[in-house]
Image 1: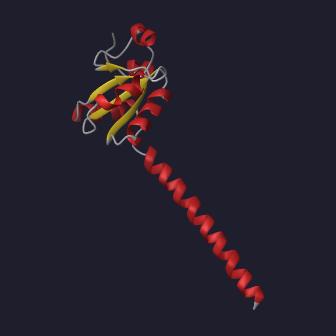
Image 2 (image 1 turned 90 degrees about the horizontal axis):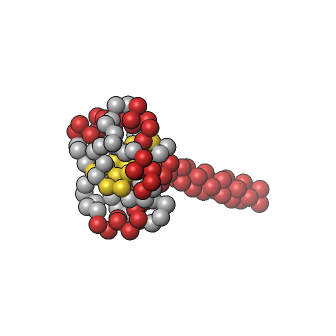
Image 3 (image 1 turned 45 degrees about the vertical axis):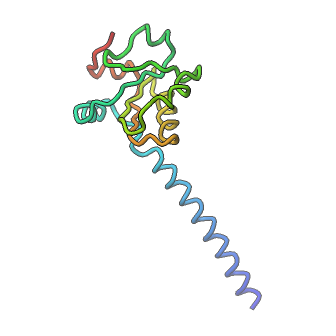
Length: 136
């Protein structure tokens, strides 16, 4: 009898652990799924929905070259980006880029967590330029 109770207890604990692990990994996938898109996907989405393009690099990086269609330059590293969030419409579509896609990915996730629904990390500036996006 004791062995049966012990076996049931152990199986229950294993089941709870597995359930929690599964839920955490699926939550993480849901949060990141659809945020990071390729340059081709960006072209397609941009053709469907113009949206707002935000460069999250530093002012110096922006001045060295940026997408011609960039609507805003809000530096993620100095707090400018976070300070501007309250001024942005949560119903708008946003496309974010930086040098490599790392900072824009962080910024996109910040926006998603703040309740913005249509936010996309479109990657790095040089990749976008190579893909044919006009630069200044």
